[in-house]
Image (cartoon, one colour):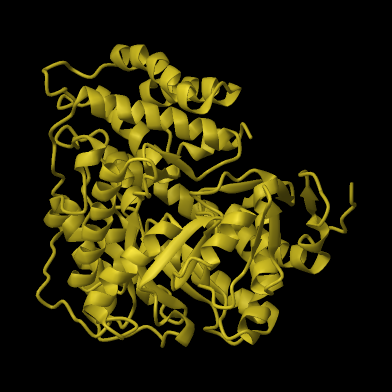
Length: 528
């Protein structure tokens, strides 16, 4: 095994396989260490603020727009100009940093490609480092793959790359600085910046990022401070880095102006991260006796609270000359059932047509087979224009009450309960085996959709409104009885595997325990 030269005070306990030393170089690791030492204390402080805020919400507090930042919401300011490479983002494809997926996503015909170290990636050590190798090779157009008799390489024209590092809550347990785990997000970001930022600029693009799971503008400020220091360390002009923030927590929805303002020299807009947003609503109001959402499949972008969030995000972005990017269409093509495929594709078409008509500048898809369909819907509205930032939505007025209008509450069905259990076990089993992006029941599932599944089950058990449409109360005993039945169905699809047995046990623990785990990926990370 290769020996690394490490900065003073750094330890790495992950295996150093062939090629890893090309990423884990002394200078790259020195940047990781410097950023960690500069910002780790503040990261922990902000995570502690999250815990205290959660306690207040559990006790009945309701979020509202911040009175102390009214001057920012009411001010007449704009973000810095968007670089040419990010002006046209009508369709963005997403996926993990696995080599074949990287090549296929770049070649998909999408305008942009969000490559993911976070929710669609299981953060085993090998995935994190080989992901960095894959992106380095892709940026330099040297990436290729021979697999199952097929050859994969990049086309001449490829999508613009945007990288999603891990969120603030996730550590990188294989790297210690001064005896403590470092931030997974800082690790992902620093390695990518060190190896690729200047190369990207030389090729007419730049270091562009998606920032996940934020709960406040102060968390955005931390990222901005990291950007400033990193640009100084690497000799890059301030404002070189651009970042789009995923608004995927209910608390961030009350601070969208403020988040854009904190990142105004580095902002490339906001994205409506719908699946995590729904999970966030369940998590933050899990103990509220009045809160209870219907079957997951019934909570769509036309639900009152989701519609308000989507329109407020759009209005906020365009007021500040920032791109507004729509959320994920998780449906994927169904190859062996033309009738079901037509229904699924119709759902994607409706979703993208609504976003484009509302004024969004683009939207996400999870599969290359959806790029052309989504592009068609945006072109119908945009024509030859790269975006529609000029479309101001001054007609939109969204109040705090609108953002908190949690409907529908019904139906809750046995089929919906079983679906949550089934998806949870299937996804967790795949994640434990190293795969974070899993097609299940014709949807591309990642950690966010699995979070909704287990959070709904936990909340239905505890809420007085958690009653099936046939009148039965959802109980822990009911869920425990269904879990082995759904495990058998999962195994009938995927085969035997120890990770699925473990996943069933984890799902039972997480959905029936007295306490609610903040993120399912936190306890799971300790098992991989």
